Image (tube, rainbow, N blue to C red; front, side, top):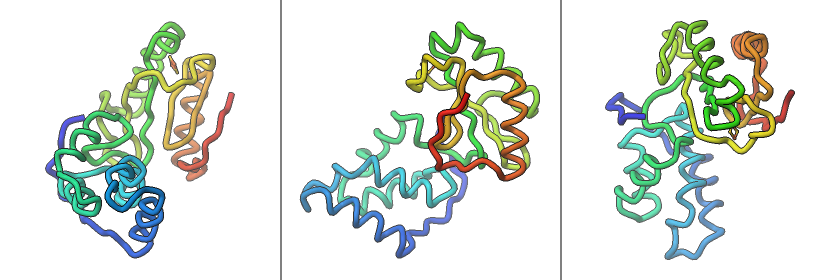
Length: 180
Ligand code: FES
């Protein structure tokens, strides 16, 4: 994803700071960088699931490291978002096993149904569709991830049902569930 210059309110709440402090407690005081990945997850979760440059700078300040050390991590991993995304980000695996079992067609079906291109977000801010590399569930191909949730052995009917469930507020983004 490209870098966004959209405004983002930075709000390190006492609860978020307490969570960061807890993560930092697992590492020596002079090795705060070791907590970078989990801290980024916590900070991203608390900021509408994306990390502006300003927020990345804030993380660098908290961990007492250089901003570039945060940028290089955020830009490497697709699990960190560098621009605003929809509430539900459908991450379609399109590596070998999923590709052989129709991942591209399913992603195209989803994009057409939602009226977006890959990487775009629906105007209501609910859905973003992206293609990603192998998510480690090759035996259940084709599959997608939304939040911490895997949807597997995908069909167009399952995509339809998932979209309906998201719209109905039935999808818990932080419940890791392996489903048929
Ligand atoms: S190839 Fe799709 S999960 Fe591995």
